[in-house]
Length: 448
Ligand SMILES: [Zn+2]
Image (tube, rainbow, N blue to C red):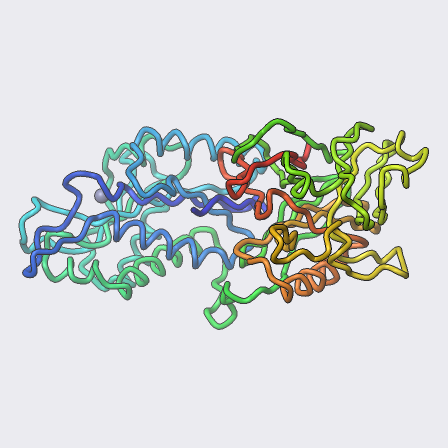
């Protein structure tokens, strides 16, 4: 599942794949071997390729009208895209927003001579027309097929969406030669490149050449956006690692002590805080919210790194063995979250120690809190708390050192890795859902 990623708020592109894999009728006639291609296979492949090409552009945000495999009704797609557009516009009122809907054409569903590439705009909308013309020129130059032109049509998606929009019919499904093209990865890539070239031309953005693009497989930490005081800022790398910068006073925690299974919650910017269950073995990190001690397991005979926000909004990281180590400071603790200490530039004696989590590095005994996906950090220079998440990271030792390097590269003053249900990401999609890995979410750090 791919989600909208908000980067800088300059350009916003909604991509629509037209139909679902189960939409009746939208397919090629039968090929000689009795097989056929469903239109959505092509449409979806192209928009995913467009998405992949656009992720290298920091100034462009991308939204998909659907990420489900099954069909989502046109009404629902339009509702989603208009809601996302409204939200985006609220955040970034001066952004430019467009929608591209990708299709394969059909005449009457019987093999015939109909052929070519076309683009479509809503007939009375001259802004759409100008946009579609640029897409048309770039798309046709990549498909290499006959240009059927840019025509005005009353299609629902381009009529009812609030942003500038264009619908592309890349080639004909019921032209045998073109249907065979529609099946190929090369043609799908060509269509995606044509659409991206058109989008870049329309926005006036210069193209990033392929050899300058990150592979997306290797971890590169290029959080490029400025770190500005007293604002909530969302940034992302090409590989999907995400950071949220926020002032300490905006950090908040919701605790759900009685939840037992996977849950979703609505927050705009959030990560899991700590995971804790009924079994004391799994009652992991200490957690204090507004002076109330939710967790501080009696099984902690080892000190644990704790990220602390005091009621005067000062921030600190301390290794504590028990709640009594806080002494009188307990009464001034607003939030305290235990984790694995990764770096602490304020403490000369600090060194990374897996056992600081409260377990003896307990791989193989059922609990190995090797929390290398979700980090809570603080940058003293700019007085910012940071939520960091990394996708697709598996639990293993080397990556923890990799994470420490990342924390240093990001110039965190101190940082703890969190056990947010084990493997939880912050997901800022249109629904703002936070998802666990099935084991439950018991406390959530969110931005007020
Ligand atoms: Zn279609």
